[in-house]
Each structure stands twice: as structure tokens, then as C-alpha cells.
Length: 85
Image (tube, rainbow, N blue to C red; front, top):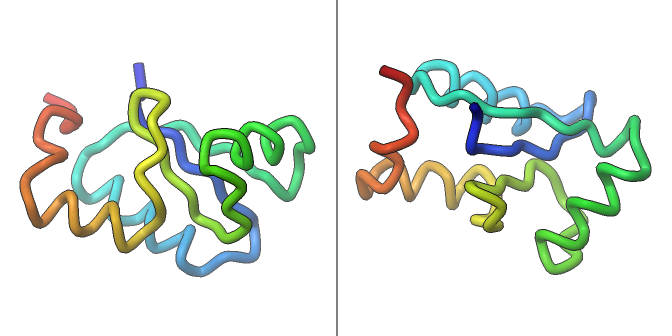
């Protein structure tokens, strides 16, 4: 089951880049489109301490931030346990 949740919109190039990297790294994720669902927008706002930009990413229900924080975690080898085997 995916442990990564990606909150995104359909018009976000950084969201697309994030999805591409997650796929490249073989990390499963669930995408929640905040531009299509008020419930998912509310969930994103609650988990991210009211961040308004996308993408927003959570791992195991814990907010980690956006694209920059995700790539920093990858560079620091903090995502190894999320890789699909």
C-alpha cells in the first residue's frame, strides 16, 4: 500500500515533475487532486499546517513539505524504505 500521498492540481508543472521522480525512484504514491475535491483540499490544509502551494507531500500521514523537501530526503537516503521491491 502506498505510504506517500501527493496533493496536487492538474495545472502544476512541479506536481508533474514530482510524479515523474516518484515513478523513477519506484516509490508508490496516492495522488489527491485538491483542484477537484474540497475534501482533499481540506485534508491537505490540515496535514500541511495550511500550506497553499502544491505539491504537498505526506509520508505515513506526516507532512514532509513539497518537491524540494522530497528531493532533499532522497539525496540524504531517507526514502530507501519506500522503494518498491
